[in-house]
Length: 98
Image (cartoon, rainbow, N blue to C red; front, side):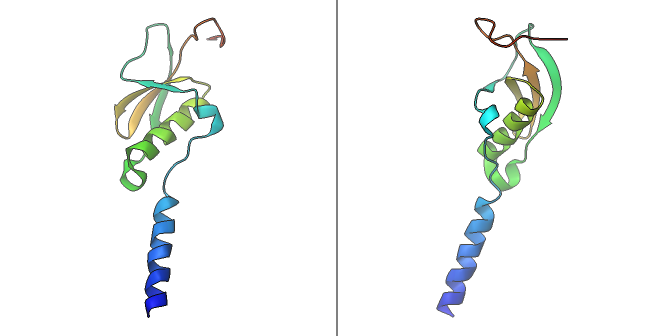
């Protein structure tokens, strides 16, 4: 019985850990703020889920979506909603195209 309980608790912990969204390598450079510059191009809404993985997991999910769209900036609206942007980089490292 004791081994069954340890197995059950271990399985539960592993399943909870599996719900956390990790940050993709391309998403590491995505900046987060509560507003974007007028020079930034809106790439649309992005979504996360804070129910299972918490706020960090939700933000990671949104940052991953920003990077997938070619963006580099995330404006967080709520814990689970944001807007992806492509903003000019200092020094002109990333060109903006229409």
